[in-house]
Length: 234
Ligand code: CA
Image (tube, rainbow, N blue to C red; front, top):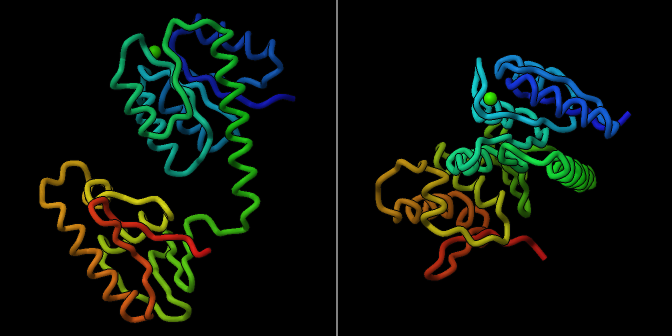
């Protein structure tokens, strides 16, 4: 049996058409027309891919996607109405693998499904190669666990405020990528934060005083005029 695809679409004719085409291609297909049911099915079931319409009864597709991303990495292709640019942008921001604009040629949808499935299989493989626990980041003797909200240096716990923790997590998620003060500010304080970007410098200073100075390392590096980075150990 091929990959199992969940089709979430309230236009009955379109849903039926897509279902038949997918079955013809050898995929296994489940279908629902309601956003709330889609979320339940997606969380409970094992799907390889979800085709998700945005305008849905119950719960809209973007909301389904957002909630789903919190606990499942199933790839999602959004079905958007023509020219709904905002939907596309927020959809990709919310973690959609791809989107396709209605009306679409079935060949194009099938091609995008193949690509998304292939990319996802590759990503799953590369994370499987690393036996790292999900949500745990390491740098030298430091480890940060998202789940327990704990930062350790060897056996010593480092006590951080929530914002310091978020800042450190973002830097560890992006090892070797220089993050600008603006980017850090957006991610730690949220887009609606109106304030000075030097707030970032203040948190970096706190982090350095709790980590670098205590353990004699240079973990967070300043890239002059650009921002901050944690470099991988080579
Ligand atoms: Ca719809």
